[in-house]
Length: 266
Image (cartoon, rainbow, N blue to C red):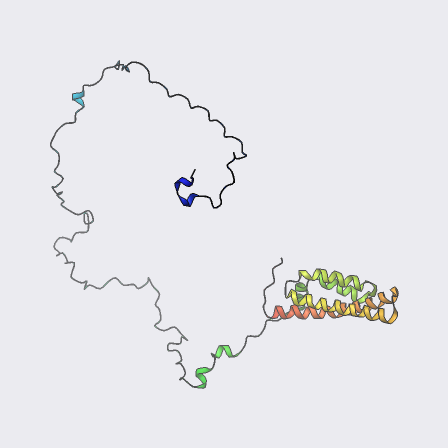
């Protein structure tokens, strides 16, 4: 442990008031280590083998003269050229630097005859227009006409909006006393629509806000009459059940016509 005797950098920043024993438990006393094993007394003894052993002189390798490693090997033919084709008797061997003059084998019957130019092929493309001309700044001819949007059918809209959203709205159209409940059920199931959920949710929120305003107007006009309030809210919910199928259908149909991908469910 460093003390003030080791240098001023080890001195404490404040002078201690007193030196006391730290309030910690004393260290455990380590057990004494085992004493080392003493070697046995006397010299070790060696027992000779009982079976017959060869003489050491017979184990020395023979000193016959070996091959000089500096002497190269005598090779009569290379491994790559051994067994290659030899010229027939009476014909001269062609030098490797001389080109082949004899015609090769005919390919007739192996490959189909290819025409020099494919039919209706544009050999020379149209030249670029001159700079600083109207044709120079105009877009390509193919990009001038926008692609027609794909047709959207009623079945596709029904499948995208889902039956769980449309069936409660249809029930609320014809049954006034169930319109409030059916509107709430349709709003809860609208979260399963995979296209433009924010726009669909805003349409329902607008319908709910209008329905709340109808209730406030009914209370201000007739007081807190439960029958009149329920009648006014049911009538407003029935109107919302009539309008929302068309609004939600148009939102989903525009998404399908634009080729949008379905949203992922959280």
